Length: 148
Image (cartoon, rainbow, N blue to C red):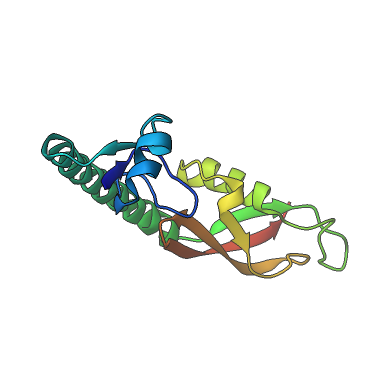
């Protein structure tokens, strides 16, 4: 029996996926638990419409991500840090500080968990970080640590 999944099901498939399962599994588990619906012509048409809408949302989101990437790459982010006499900073620069600097300088709120600093930042200078936007889209960002 062919069914359309409404929710993600482990070891079976994801949302809006058309799959073939045994009749008993579909009728006794998937459909009563509201995990799937039967793949009749009406539901297939709704699935096609949902996929079109999802594609439009993804295109819009991709355009927005590309705009953010251009703004972030335009100029390096500057992060102020307290330093000792030898030029080493007290502590290190973290993704939290980088996320705050992006919000203050560029106006974009990026979750700190999506930012991965490539090197340990313990001295003044220029460093790189990766930002993962999800869906396989990521960019490399350059930031500069300056003394306060």
